[in-house]
Amino acid sequence: MLQTSGNGGVLVQITNGSARRPAAGAALWSAAHAGLRAMAHATAQELRPQGIRACLLVVDGPLDSPATDERRWAEGVPAQASADQTAVAEAVRYLAGQDERAVSYELVVTPTGRQWQP
Image (tube, rainbow, N blue to C red; front, side, top):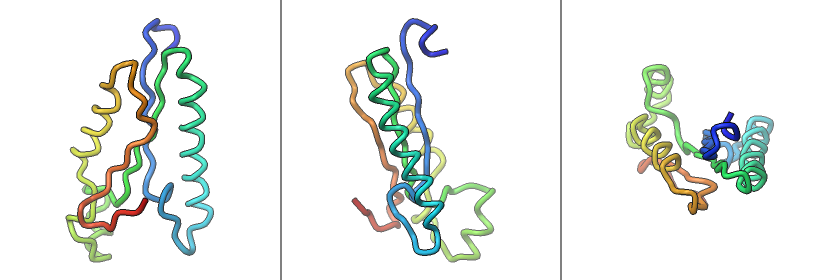
């Protein structure tokens, strides 16, 4: 569909911190997210000549959402350690709004209450 529009477009794949932060007991989950990360980067290289930009947005923390509130409270996760939905939406808007010269292949949103990890 992006090719037929004539002006390329942007694909933003969103994943969670497992793409960067493998955890004990979650090897298969982490491997799947690492694979998704590799697919997004390969897709970016494959589609760029056609004017289509692909990038990955890593949300490195639990999402602050009514769907996750109960679990986060039970686990004692402070609000500063969860990702704000508005910040995630702004990150997607930033990636989608870059011009054709942009080369952002990955952006990581890390809540301030989580330790940053390269």
